[in-house]
Amino acid sequence: MLILIKAIGRAVALGALLSAAPLAAKDLPTPKGEVILTVTGDIGAKNQGDSAVFDFDMLRQMGEVTFATSTPWTDGVQEFTGIPLNVLTKELGVTEGTIKATAINDYAIEIPLSDAVEGGPILAYMQNGKPMSVRDKGPIWVVYPYDLDQDYQAELIYSRSIWQLVRLDVAAD
Image (tube, rainbow, N blue to C red; front, side, top):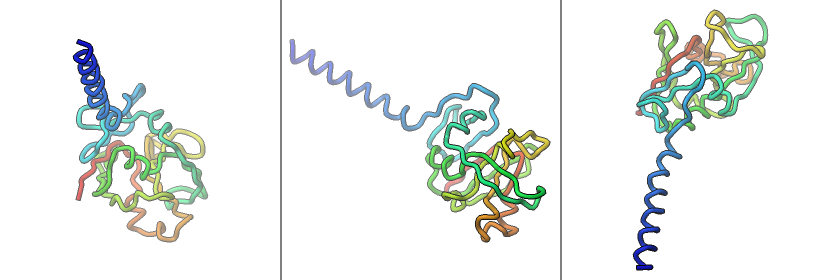
C-alpha cells in the first residue's frame, strides 16, 4: 500500500511538472491596457490565440532603452525610448527569418532578422520622454541609432524605419 501511494505521488508530481513546463516557456502575460502591437507568424510565445499582443506597459517591462539620434524626418537630435528589436524577437523565440512590419494605414516593409542586433533598432514608443501619438509617428516607430553607426545612414535602413507601426508578422526562412 505504501509503495502504491509513493508511486501515485511521483506520477502526480511528474505530471504537474510536465504540464507546467510549456506554459512557463511559451506563454506571455495578457495585456491589461490597449493593445498597441500584435505579432503573428513563426513565433514561439503567444498570449492570444496564434498571436502575441502587447500593451504599452508590457513593452516597457521587457527592458526599454533610450538613445539620442537625429533622423531625416525630425529637426535636430531627438531622444527615443523603446524595446530593442533583438529583445522582442528573443522574447518571442524568433531565431531566423524576415519580419513584415505593417503600419496603421497598411503600409508594410520587411526587416531582416539580421537587423535585430544589440545596439540596433528599437521599437520606439516614446520621443523626448513622451509617448508618441499617431499624429507624431506613434504608437510605435522603428528607429535605428542613425548617428551611432554610419551603416545606419543609408536609404535601405531609412526605408525600414516604419512609423505608426501596429503589426509584425514573422516568416521563417
